[in-house]
Length: 67
Image 1 (tube, rainbow, N blue to C red):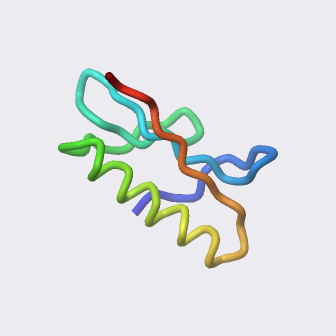
Image 2: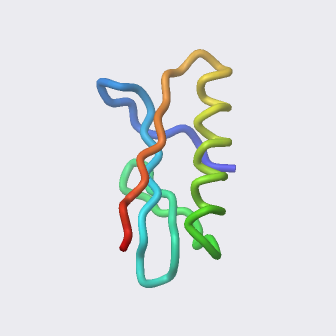
C-alpha cells in the first residue's frame, strides 16, 4: 500500500500516469507500480485515497488522460 502523499490545497493527491514502464501512481515525485492497466492503477489509487479520507485527511485521485 502507498504511503500518504503531499498535501496540496485540495488535500492529498494521487496521480495515475502513463510511463514507459506502464501505469503508475505518482505522489510527491515518487512513482509506484507499474500496474498492468490504467484500471488497476486507478483502483489502487482510489483505495489509498479512501484510506486517507477514513483517517481524516482530504484526498483526491487525478488520472492522466491517455488516448
